Amino acid sequence: MTKVGRFISDPGEGALCHITLDSGEKILINHDKGGFKGGRVSISQTKWLGLSGDTLFTLDLDSPEGRAALARLTHGATPTSVHATPLGAMVNHVRDCKSVAEVKVKCATLTGGSP
Image 1 (cartoon, rainbow, N blue to C red):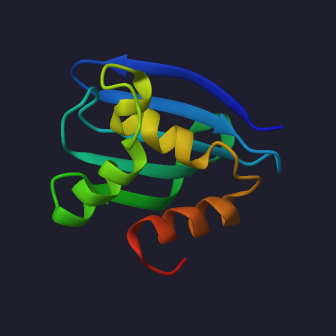
Image 2: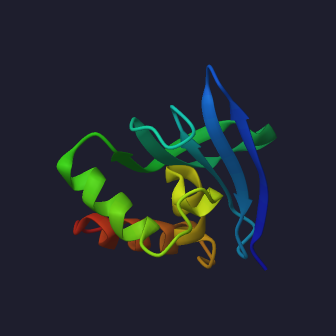
């Protein structure tokens, strides 16, 4: 079963969340600005000791494509809830994925790309 870790926020560094997928693979979702601001949301596969490894997906929230994707991700979320933030919305989007391969496919479909 997928295990979603704590949301960690640092005003100077942004926000992040570690997720352990059903496969045992671990990913890190990071929003470089935190809160409700623009910036970038990225998903990386974490390696030994939780260090960030390969970047699986990046979404530029200041681009038209990023704003449209974020609008789809946060549609219906309570405006002041964690699910309305870029980090919370992305965690919610991939939380049912069972492997890194599924994360790649699900994120590619978010932006209309291919995995």
